[in-house]
View 1: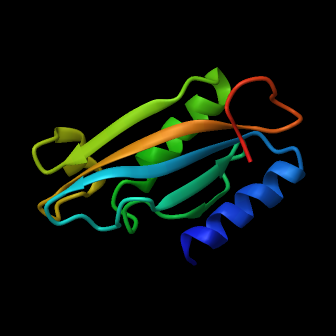
View 2: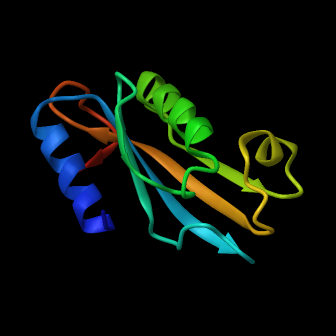
Length: 116
């Protein structure tokens, strides 16, 4: 599934008035599992589509996305081999990634957040 498909899923879910967060790879260094611009969309029930790391750190990003949905406050996450949390969640590819997680505004959680 490419990023266009992920954004289409996010748009469809937003149309269903689900509370959502969108995670986007905003920077990579060295050997990164997914390129900049890769997306993961998460709803308040923990359902998700897409990938920001090929599975390495998805669980941690989904947990943060659920927090972002609850609080409405975006977060920036960084994972890399020098980061103890990255080893815990499995990012041992030798690179680092930075992921921006933001709430997505839908009818059920307006105002605030990104509007699709």
